[in-house]
View (cartoon, helix red, strand yellow):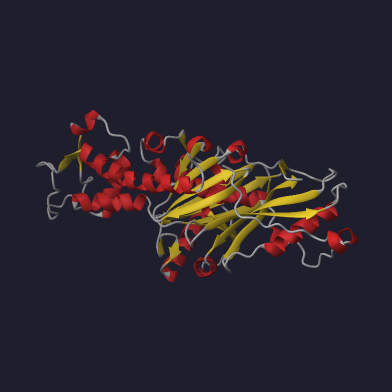
Length: 427
């Protein structure tokens, strides 16, 4: 059965420290999102989400995109770019205006958004996106469409995603050097949220933990939007490096051991289960013997699991601290969703559920037509989420026209009453 007619194309590039991946999705005339092609390769020129080698990063981006284009049978000119580093930060600002108890009109909403646009100034950092999450009427939250309703005060909660300017400029330049236009840079936790969380989870309160190669982003969703974000400079590659150091082996060997035999949960059988340190054809007789290995260069699986759980213990301690600082603690906390490449480790959900004392599940991309088995894993959640985010193209209040004129409804002492508050405590 052939594909339906594609009306729009969306290209995405996720620039990670472990891999750089690209995906092309098409939107059918009925609105269905279809994966047309994807490509990925080992990351180069990227460290903890920052561009460290412009030429190497550009080459890796171009290579990943060309692989996706070849698989999709089409070319793209612009992409939505995922960013997991660059000092990401999240804020929620509340802006209100007085409308005097009358019916809310389109002019009121536009004026409110203009007031919100003019208020977005946070320490001269770069604003990646500033989006209205939902409206309020006289302080009552959760109003999706206030048009036609009566109120004394009309408000809006604005989610603002911030980043350091220079790293974002480097990222944009690396993509542009790969002969691509950058439609927008999207924070990885926002994209991953589109892929992994249901609207209800984003509304009720969910912690999304994205374990990348070099960075773990801890994002807090509530009220339908991201309200808190902490970036931890520790990821799955750090676990791989610790394995390599512990057994005196190379990184690619450590990565293979972690993926094939590693687990976040220990079992009594691990002490009897002997695993080979070297893969087929890797033992040329020149490498020194691995500490604790037998004459066949095998080690108890328990030793590998011990190294992994030791590193996970350090990571979950930092995650727990970040969640507490964001108010996600005690009876005020809810479900945790773990995603990213590090979430592919066996037993990770069970380990984190025990360590965090919360229900934990692994987040994956939604079931999409054309999404291959290799891409239907936690490691590709952000990439798929970028395309889903692009298809919705959420409104950014910075796009509200600066030529907007204040109407007579806002003259005199009843002119705008802006109230910009600190991050709203949802928990």
